[in-house]
Length: 218
Image 1 (spheres, one colour):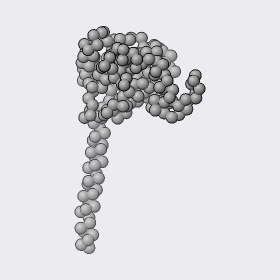
Image 2 (cartoon, one colour):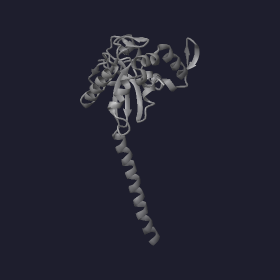
Image 3 (tube, helix red, strand yellow):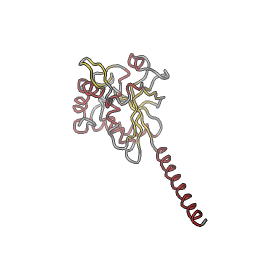
């Protein structure tokens, strides 16, 4: 009987300990925050920001338009009002919102109002979607970037709008081993992505515009 009684407190302590760990994990998860940005091809923005320390996830999607749950075809055709965008979820104890906005602005052509690089049209324009304190942070980041660049930045700060994740086909495109047929023949999505990014001139233009301050160009 004595041994049973002595074990019970240990079991109770173990249960409490496990409960605290679970609560801590839940609490930590609840502290994650997110921003939504549009920077042309969402494959590229997703690929860039998933490399950033403190970023937990980057999801490709659509925002800014009135139509609920739009398709890729509807958005890229034009007229939907939606942008190709990425929702970036991050741990603010590791990286801050102003830092993320600064990286974003230095990873796109902020002087181009008609699209990005080889992708033209309204769905490929740049924008930051933010309200409240986030909009203030975005405005400060934009002001600092413009002063550093010495050119007018046309990337707008727009009010937050519903974000609709893109089709599964588009998620993690840059690292997918799925085979697709391209004009160069069968390629994995990851290989096709690299060919597209290089041909589109994204990194070359960002480097030309931002010089040593360019983000994600190696």
